[in-house]
Length: 558
Image 1 (cartoon, helix red, strand yellow):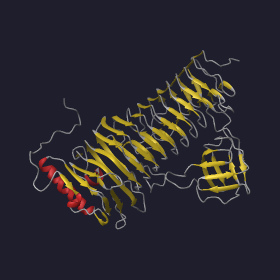
Image 2 (image 1 turned 135 degrees about the vertical axis):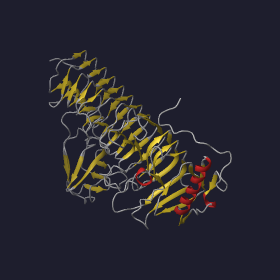
Image 3 (image 1 turned 180 degrees about the vertical axis):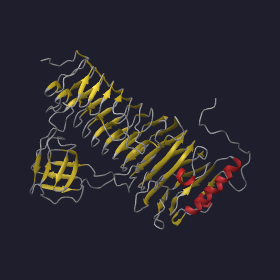
Image 4 (image 1 turned 90 degrees about the vertical axis):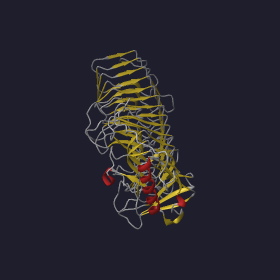
């Protein structure tokens, strides 16, 4: 059976082209690997030679780079079909990128783009592997942010493999490859990428894959990767052209995203599967669905399952602008600095109402605000079988302090006279004069601060305050609930959830709260156990209209 968009077979000759071996030792073909010689011209020449040979005989070639430091300066290498680059392992084989002699050139290690090289479905790359080496991008600089200043930047790649790479401190995205078909990204460590992203650009990710170039199906997996302290997303998928079909066939499995702005993001896929991942300590959200990408298109139909989403500075899961559906099932969502799950508006042009959001069998606990908060209209919402306990931990009142008991460090504030409740200020914005910082955690006398941006050594917006300077911590939200409905919710099913608080002091005020901005029309709220919250089982500032409200244990009809 022929599949659409599947490249056709090519002929392979029995014998390879003379003088173009199938396996090349780079140091026998002009690369020095001594950390001083510019190895880029020799690498480019070898890639072209082997690429020409593959075009002639159809046989893929491998460039093996023995242990060494390979300096790549002032130009990137345009890659060719059928050429692979292998090293002796990260730390042993290192490619050090620099553009000190040509600041106008972004100098990726390898690239092949539609804009510069005419990459397309018809002019795609195929049968390329990049494995077992390190890319150090710390030597690349420019006056303005350049999204091409990546470690690897390939577009339209078929049967590609990226395996066991350590990519760090690139000016833009570490691995930024678009339009992948039948590809594998396996075992990458990407750290500190997007150095030159000022926080407003969206090109400074660890692993960023543009999608939509092959139609409705793009088959590739991202597995066993770690993305740490990258400027925007740790790992994300982004639809590249407005009006294109959101592609299916993409999976992110067994990955770790820590200390990025967003951990893992879906900006335009259809049916993205994210499974068995850990998202922790990210500054905005652990998992993010939004229409903030280049095409203003959010993902839909995705499944987030069996993940640990813990200790992110704001929301654990942030869902915005998707038309739906989307499913969260079997995740641990805990210890986040604002909400566990937040349905919100994040810009873009998507539909105003999301449909068929499913939040099922998750474990929500220890979040600073509400466990589940709906601040954007939703229709046919399903919240079923979740365990929601001990949330609303940001309960400490407003605090001030100054004088000889107060000292400041890059990521720490100490007030020896304080008696702060443990993590009662987590997620708050601390103000000291003109400087601000976000509290990541606290004990009775010490505030631990989140970095002001990924990979930063300080938590302050400016200079570290001088000792004794007065500080201000704002008050906590007055109401903190297990489930909060702060927008129009129609035909929802909220069933079989256990919502309670058994810590001392109890900080989760209500099991279910409909705010004065929320509404619940024709909803089915049944068989929930709401006993054991701090104030009451339910708080209904806006009375529900229609539907069924039955057998909710702990609810007092009066």
